Length: 238
Ligand SMILES: *Cc1c(COP(=O)(O)O)cnc(C)c1O
Image (cartoon, rainbow, N blue to C red; front, top):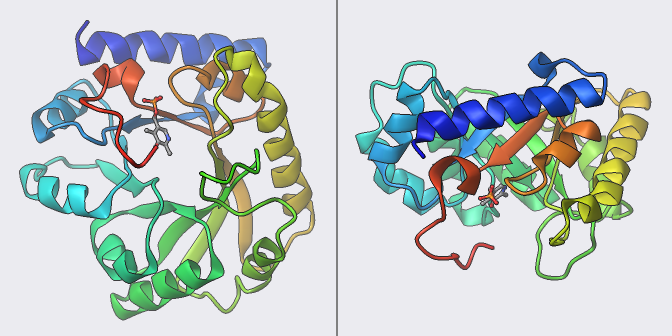
C-alpha cells in the first residue's frame, strides 16, 4: 500500500467514526507521526496532501529538517518526552509542543519562546493510566494544577488542551475508559474558565485505537504505523 492509499483509508475510517459519534469529520485533525521515517517518506505524505506531522525526538528532527524545506503549510509538532535542556532547540524547530509534562519544562519553553519573540502552542500531557514508564502528569497531580494556574505568567505559551497515550491493550476497546476519562478531565478543566487556558484540543488515538478515541471526543489522532508502515525498530522512546 502506498502512503496516499493508507491516508485515504484512514480519512474514511475517521469519517465513519465521527459519524457514529454524531460528530463532524472536520472537528478532528490527522497528525502523521513520522518518527524514524526518512525525509522522502515524509515528502511522499506531504505530496498526498498531509500537512500536520508529529516527531518525538528533537535530535532526530534536527537532522531531518534540512531535507524538509519547501513544504509550504506543513506543521511539525513535538509529541515525545522533552528534556528541559533541549527546550530552546525544540522551540526553534517545532511549531508546537504537544507533550508538556512538567512545570519546569513549561518554564523553559516559555523562556525560549520569549527569546525568539514567538508564541508556542502547547498541550499538557496526562498520564491517564498512571503507568510508571510513561511521561505525563497524573490527573490529580498538584503540578498539573500549578501549571494551569501559572498560565497567565507563562505568557509565551498558548495552552490549548490535553494529550495522552493510554495503556496499550490488544483490543482497542480497552482504551475507551481512558479516553473517556480524558474527555471528562478536559471538559471539567474547560468549565473552570481559567485565565489563558484553552481546552479546545484533546490529542488522543493512535494507529490501533484512533476510531475509539474519535468516538470518545478526540480532536487530533496521531497515526504512524497505519500511514507509513512498521517502523524500522521499536525505539527506546516507547
Ligand atoms: C509513535 C507515536 C504515535 C503513533 O503510533 P502508531 O501506533 O505508530 O500509530 C502516536 N503518539 C505518540 C506519542 C507516539 O510516540
